[in-house]
Image 1: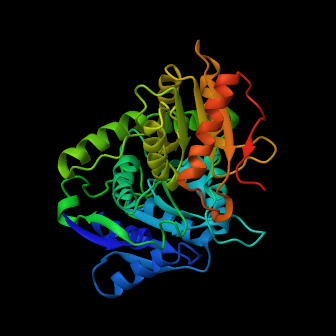
Image 2 (image 1 turned 30 degrees about the vertical axis):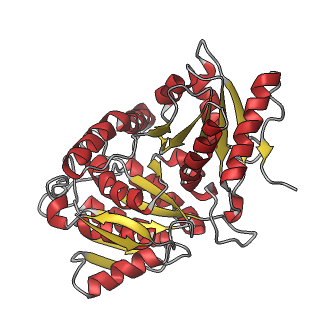
Length: 391
């Protein structure tokens, strides 16, 4: 292991090398462009030894990965925003075919209006495709989570694709340190992929994806749901092994900070969760018992983890960097649903902000948390959601 300084996009390209990915298919879109650009360069230099396929659209990129994965190859792609939306049909195909593809999505606002900066609307709109979804907050976490994602996806109990999300420009084009692992080191953790049930092979032809009548279709969907739900147990094993080998642990489905005695817990995804730690430290110095829960895994949603946190706090201050139009923040509504069938129901305050790359500073996060403290003291929940920093 050696420490290097790169952007999250370049680190993602290096994760492809470390994980010995056999096929990468990609189409450029800001701010994800430098992921395939760097992979192409590493391919030309002989550092990345797999196949790099230049396609004409993101739709084709995902279907090329589907074709590669169907033959038993380890496959990867990267995209952003409207590119992810163009993949929609293929995203559903990948999950239904039970293919362990890994996708690095560089979160970007969906246009129009034209904006190339971060919102989580692109990936949040794909929560029901069946892809396991992670949201990360550092270059180092991005690199290592991509490697872990292959181990998780390829586990026989899972066999579902994984999307690892990183905030556009905040991470994608920002230099930071990360700890690089040579492929020979990763081999100890991630063996070559061996498709356990089926793969396309001219020497052993199979029929896959054929017509399924009503008496069987539902069973296929249940098995997808069951496999995705297994992600908590399997990922716990993956992180434990990774930590033992490389000393890296990022907190599981939810990374908690000073939550043990917290009265109010701030929840968020991505880089805002990293900023929140500084806000929590300052609030603690000012006498407020606040904690921070970075929700790393949004699908499957960590219901039991949320319920455990909710059983010991007065309120959640839940922050979303995306909108489910007409119904508020997508993650806060998952939290509300998780807490519905529980004896102790904390107050759940919803905040939306940081859209289109608008900055969320430590004072902004403190303002959100202090607003929740005031609501607890007064007993008044207030509006259904608060759009932060609307002036």
